[in-house]
Length: 120
Image (cartoon, rainbow, N blue to C red; front, side):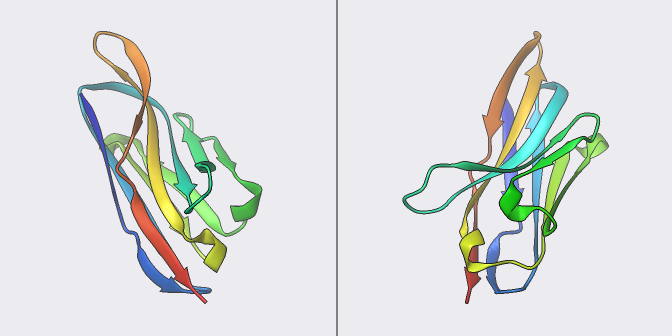
């Protein structure tokens, strides 16, 4: 059993910043990668950023230069620093982890989501 718990969402004005956190807990053998996805009303869930166990990162074009993903491997935590926020960043943000549990089984796990609202 693995749980991902996000925090840090909220309401911010255009140009503001927020920092999201996600902690993974449970019967974790290893975390292969973690990432953030978002879903706005009426839209499909989309990738925002991912980070591998080796700290290689990948970003959606729409957030490059504004968002930074990082991780604390010792604490099974991933962060998303969001700067220069725009109204189009408004969405529910979901944490994702590709996690191996014991006995060795790898699967994708999701958090419950945290709302980010950027006012114009």
